Length: 69
Image (cartoon, rainbow, N blue to C red; front, side, top):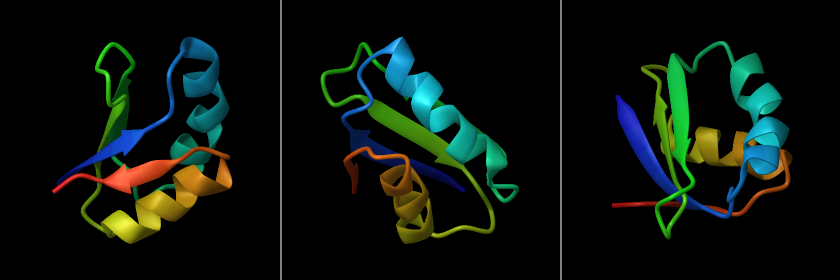
């Protein structure tokens, strides 16, 4: 399942800061951040985690994140 989130991950340094948190979560198959989008869209593919669980991982890295409907 692919989830989409609005974030404040807005540059390469921010992507690098969150990378370890997302890569260390074994239940995440893939992820990417569109820093060119005004909403800084994070797309995460996971068949095991809920949107809330992914949100907690990103918040642990120190970023704001909001589930997009």
